[in-house]
Length: 324
Ligand code: PBG
Image (cartoon, rainbow, N blue to C red; front, side):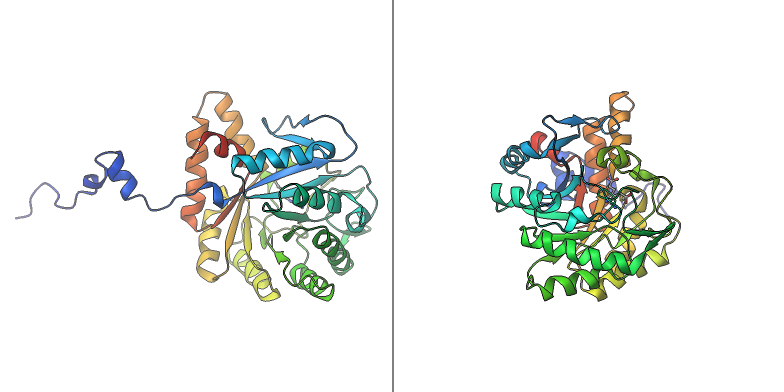
């Protein structure tokens, strides 16, 4: 007759903190995190981003000091976004050898050569209409945008960016960028592809942070959040096109997608905990509804558990300062 008491007792391994540490499966450390930063030209002071408490736009003139501070705190990598004052229809400042994209990469690499610099490669912060490419009427022209992405990538690579990170969500962008980089001799510049990027409302606060002019949405080029098979297909296409690493964005609401891609590809996989995810945790913490530090660790740990190798997170400096 079976005993009324169990013989399998998972609680045995949870007895105290040492047991729990020994048997913990997933973990993250500072070396897995990339800090996204916003750098604005032609301003003197830091600009707080109201929808992302604790995050500020960095004046270009103070970028070197900030990079030094990050490096001292143990940050290994930054993803750079420019906030441009030179908008035009095509975002041409991005392929100007002395434009903001180039200057940001140069300042970062000159200040901390060991810092891994990933240049977000897109046009939405450099176009007067806020779309991620060349606009014809209300249509974003895929192939015209590819040519401009190639030009921007070469300029960023020449300025020292270690990774080109195309986030424009154009078909064929990885192939076009790889070809342009190789043609210009930048064989060692890597591509961190925003390979599965959803048209997500979680990017809300980014619009204030990045100062994008967009009216409307990006649903004709970014993915439908409800599509799981297509999400895997998008990343596998980028792998075939020559991406060095893949990415799922956003992260927290897309853990199933992270797991699917982890199982479908051998490439390193990143996940981007985006502006809205950050804001939701910050504001809930400020309201006293949750314990911010614990929620940050739990959310990042869950993203690792789902299968991400790297995590882009605005909490990276908080973690560097407070320890894991
Ligand atoms: C640029 C880009 C966006 C983000 C990263 N790169 C905005 C968008 O696609 O609308 C969002 C990052 C975030 O919300 O933290 N295309």
